[in-house]
Length: 244
Image (cartoon, rainbow, N blue to C red; front, side):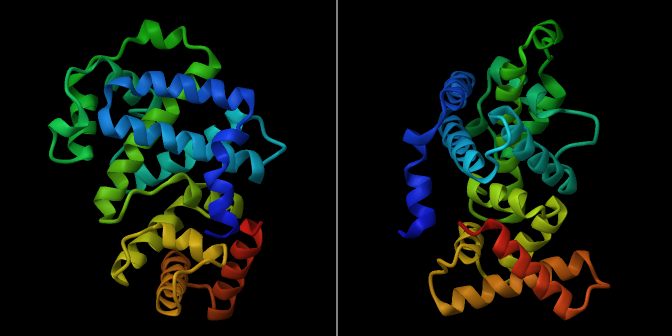
């Protein structure tokens, strides 16, 4: 399983008391979201556990806000969310009030549009949220956006490890989208292969070469003026940043 897999598998018992409290709140919000809800709870737990190791100087709420920011930027880049509109916490609060569930729609994007256009936000309730509650709702809403992003990109669900890896490396979320698009172009739909590669746990040489090419091309696409050496130097910096 490797070092990275061991860390992720042990996250549940390693969370701080604050992390456990937040995960409990997120699980409560996700109660009516079916399978998507259980996936969101797992995402939050992983994000907190990895974040507390990657960013020990940050409070748990700040770690989650960082993950939310990355996901929101991805959603905006893919046209799933408009800037200054439909914040993730608003989407989550609408989901909590909605009669329909994600499985009632042909895609998560269609479900989001339903929430955006047909469900009224309880503004009074939102104004009374504590900072912790607001962050919990933001995590749920951003995870809904992330599910829609994975579907739109045609890849397997994008999970917390890759989000936190790119956060640690300071990679622009738009570059992340470009890298995932190239991964799909190279015949790989499992985004976990990116984290595996960065942590030295690639499945095989062929997969490793495809992932490296995807990362190279994804960065180059967003930075056409960078030289080949500069791109490889950046990849090396990413690997050094996320290494345990």
